[in-house]
Image 1: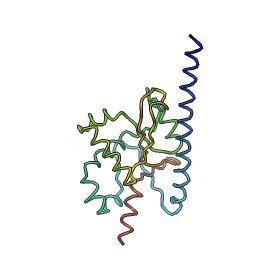
Image 2: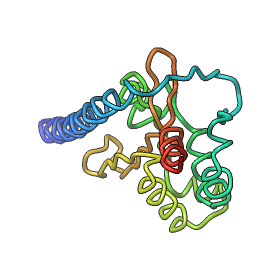
Image 3: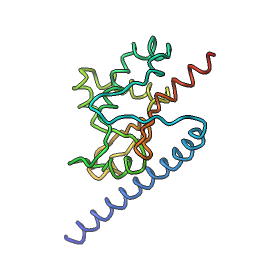
Image 4: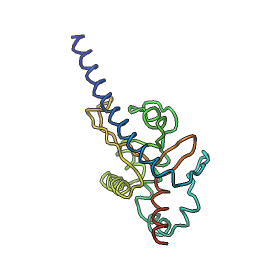
Length: 184
């Protein structure tokens, strides 16, 4: 009986290790892609105050201000940005601090039900917002299957940008800086 329990726990651990390896592989791909494009752009230092900074360059972009900010998914984006993990969090089954933050990624993950409840939106709408934000390049989503997760539940990890040497770079800044420069 004890051997079966140990085998089951070892099997779960191996599945989780495979999932972590999958995460690491995706992070390496994003890392190399990021540094290919980062050499051309300037890094901004962002303060860690209790607010969500929006750089003037981003706010001055008409595509951002007159289009994206008016869309309902902007609220979902801000909610994710508020939930980014920068430190160790109790009861975090995916250990986002270790698996993402320490690897230089600004990530957030929470149950879809909680997001929907907090934003007073249906789960299907939140799912649509996540899909649209990913399609727009504003977030990257890592899907962790229930069979790979240590808690046996499926998870979506939303990656909103990077942080290297305490300098946060948000994907949204890159998306809208490209849209502004392409119209010149």
